[in-house]
Image (cartoon, rainbow, N blue to C red; front, top):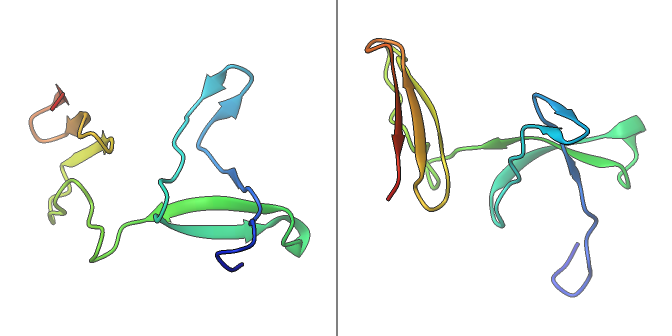
Length: 93
């Protein structure tokens, strides 16, 4: 796909999806994604997941103890689960 042609839209895999329920997280423009194809058909592409990288690091610093998990939006709204503290933090910018 070049910049002058229109690409195809991909469905996005999710941990849960159903009528009027489920997870809703779409990748942002310029995010790195992993793509799969139903029946190896490039017209049936699915985003299987998104990736952090050295250029786009995770919003929560990785640690060997791995106590923190969370969700951070592009405007820095946060929900952080901390297993060590047994706490859930919610933050807005």
